Image (cartoon, rainbow, N blue to C red):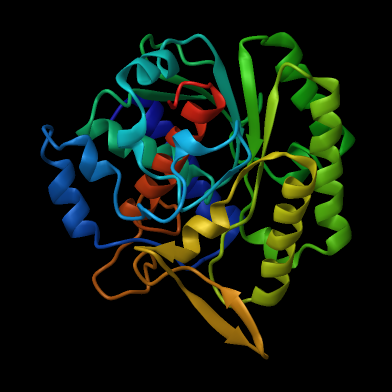
Length: 313
């Protein structure tokens, strides 16, 4: 594990204890994934599983950007030349999150262990110095456990986003991830999030801001959580925004969408294939989910970046 990875793990641990509470998880059998990862010769095709759906469009068929979800996890569709571009260091991705959001980071690091062509570096509150990697600025300026108030829900948070972007023109993308707090947000709260990101887009036309849904874990206020995620999806669809659908990735596995009935409302919820409550599964790197789920989120992230950078064909 690199020094950067150790920092990220430590920070994710703090986030799990201090920010998010216990939390249900997500994942396919970790034992199987660990065996696959022990083989450095594992083929790219293995990384494109389990959610390939031949009835749905792949990344290359999508219009530029927009929604990225369980349909877009086939990294084998990313050409070698595209991977070379994504790992060229030409641009930086700014990512603010807490423990749920770190699933993308540790998933990308896990994929890289088995397939080095998916070279990835997330640097704590800074631009990575490594060459030949996908570069991610992890956090804000003073930490990587980023609450709403530290990014979009306060004047101080918005000012820090502006300061980071203004001082670092190589940042081409910025994204903030929900954690468990999505369940308790009102419609007005989520609209404030949407309006704040929309305003930042207008202010920084050379930066692509990526919207996110929240995790689909646990039954606590599950109906409200589903409604708030649907609110985000509707806004993104109506306005042509780029959306990384974290909640959708939680609920789908192998072509099956897992739901529960809550007072007559069908609510998507974390699939048993991903859940750490499933016998035999275990939590990975303090992310409330399993290694397989983290890798699945990372695959969707890689596909999203290939499409947004226009090199997925």
